[in-house]
Image (cartoon, rainbow, N blue to C red; front, top):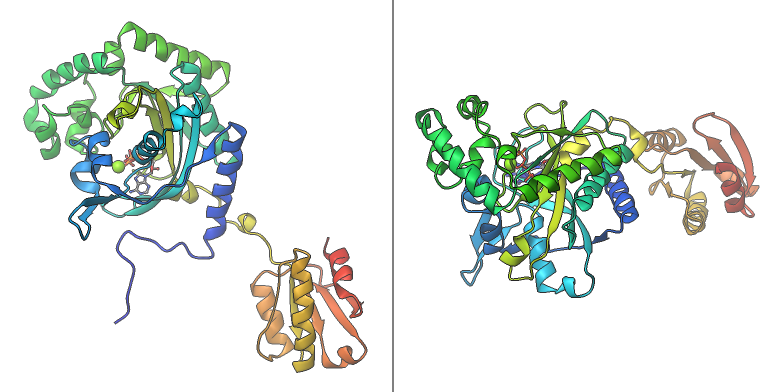
Length: 417
Ligand code: ATP
Ligand code: MG
């Protein structure tokens, strides 16, 4: 029986991986420009890292987590998202004592038990960043500017930045009461999940994708009408800073996020090119989360980009891959012995190069070089070898040049650059 991968868990094959490397490279470059440093975290955490922070009555905690007991019966969870582990680490490693402001980013796999479909998988990858210690709205605006900058740098357009504010505990309490009142009138029309969560977490209804809830949602109260003065001022200032930075955005007063820890600013980057899976990035402020983890009161804000969805938006061409440079077609055993030494020197010069391991016809070797995308082929035939000569062929122009095998590497470097 052939073994296959788990449903919703994908292999990223060599034809695809250049895009992944490209996206990671751009992220590292852009985040560096804003002073962020990478934090590499474990994939497994103790389950309460997520249940306590994300919220019990959320999709992730109720039905999407890969949780299981380890051999000692301790409940572990494969991380469904990155923020909670970053905060766990931030508090555990007392990062706040080293610097009043911490800027961290991560890149890696996340796990959610969802129905696999285009843009939605059970193992997926996120690039995320978190900024600790900055309550000021200018931090929110700069973070959204960084996300926008990142997408521009990857060459992806047709994206829309949507922002909203979820207020603080005070605003939220008033808003929740209004929502419960509003949805209770039509409780029968809510989907099963939302009806059950109505009293517990009515905000989730606003995030529900069921058609019946969608209809009811349209005339629901909006959080912006319930913001306290401070939260309202904060939100206005975020918008002013975004305008100042010339970041285009749209206020989406219906947007809430699927996790409970958000306060004040929330945002999403959406696309019209991926059907139902339209969110490419999402984030927001979480000023109270550090305390939940036993840390000091530390305002924070962060976001996560869904890498699979982002990669679906990249054009399908080969500009993302690094090109292999020189293929050596050795004709015969002696030529092959010379070739392996030339390869060693080419690679020492930083030139990506290969040869055929077994003795094959010139035609078959040329075919392999062509298929692998080599720009040049160095042909070393037995007859040429006796004269200490080889032929360098430019695969694009078909031009051929004779080289001496005295010192071929210098000549090759000159030709290919
Ligand atoms: P959605 O509403 O599409 O389920 P979400 O609100 O659950 O998204 P977040 O928790 O905000 O998503 O995660 C941030 C980003 O990670 C999303 O905008 C999306 O691009 C990506 N993402 C989330 N879940 C998945 C998944 N199962 N497969 C692929 N990408 C995902
Ligand atoms: Mg989701």
